[in-house]
Amino acid sequence: MYKMIVLAVVATGMTLGAVRADEMSTSARQTYLVISPHTPEQCLAALDHLVAERQLSKFEFGCKHGDHTGYARVEAASPEEALAIVPASERANARAIPLDRFTPEQIRALHHK
Image (cartoon, rainbow, N blue to C red):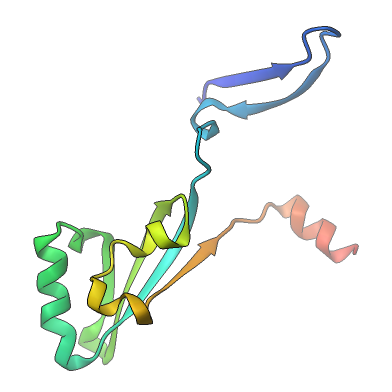
């Protein structure tokens, strides 16, 4: 069960809403899908770099299947921060895509627009 913090207007006592305590932070964090392609020739160097930086466990790869790309889900304050886990030599070709989830209610609302 998540701890809830109820936000209220003190003067009127009116409840405005509730948010999970773990969602409140001083810097907004976003989930990003980091996509980091590399060539077959760069493959071992890229993997070695991730091992040395202790980032290997954050990635999944298509290399064994001919897709020389690393994929990682990263929590970060910005796309630039998300891309920081990619070796500098590959960062120019990497992308950080913000990810969102939809609720059934949001999808229904989209149908009515």
